[in-house]
Length: 397
Image 1 (cartoon, one colour):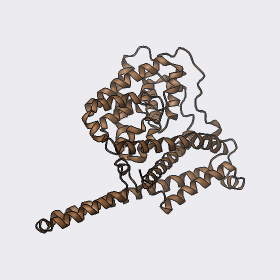
Image 2 (cartoon, rainbow, N blue to C red):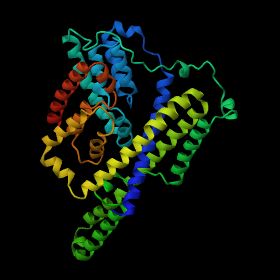
Image 3 (cartoon, rainbow, N blue to C red):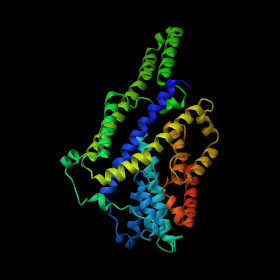
Image 4 (spheres, rainbow, N blue to C red):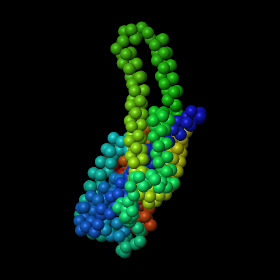
């Protein structure tokens, strides 16, 4: 593996990590600002519980699922509502999905919502005990935002800048740094996973295409003279890839600029508690290193593996084995291992059915508190999700 390939892997990792962390920061701000919207009224309507749980489930990250699990343990939400959140959530992988393939991510989320609605309606109408494994309240804390959402000591922007803290200054510097890197072209989104997965750099692909065009031209001038339309179409098609790459790079650049201008505004106007406890201690210190390492490691491993194994042919020849692996990996109650299926799907090497199966079974870190508080509910929820995943994986594939 040459240094240029490692540089592309590093750059691709930086692009994805920047997008994911940026969205996490914005989502964290929205979650904090809208904190406390649920109340005891949820207990009075199981259908509102399901709707609420679906909304919490589709929120990127694990915070929404943590909230639902906590409310379930406290007997505010019932088991069908819990299942609605566990089916719709894709954990931290949602950030990657909306970064790499936003249109497909929306389509996948709609499928998960439809599945969640269908399953929860059946459970709501057939289950007698709707609080499996929960006989008493436990002290698993709900995310409280009273000190952030409506601060008792709201400072003006001028005061925030005049009495700027180290964390605020550092976050402003980081946001401006990302904007400078994007505007200067260091982070431009011009490299694609399929080039890495194929073990080739963009330059080598272009060189091979040009060499192929020259050879074809030298060997078949006569044929081209009789089929000028086809030759003209071939050349247009060969150049269309570069235009597509440029358009996608411009779109990613635009998203990053808008995203980090938004973050810059948030950092300037937000309360000190939010910056220190939520953005710095949670998003930056906890998630940033883990996300960067996982992305770099997964892309590097897939690039190396693809040099020796044709992943696409392997999945095509043994789809049931691939489906079984996707489901087993989905059982792991943490974000990270599922990235391999996400990147394979993004590269076109994984069928939608198998990726959907993995999305259905997995729930990121969201089920960890459920495993701690009610193993029975955890096992039953995973069993239901495995059955759904097998059916969807076979039918869609």
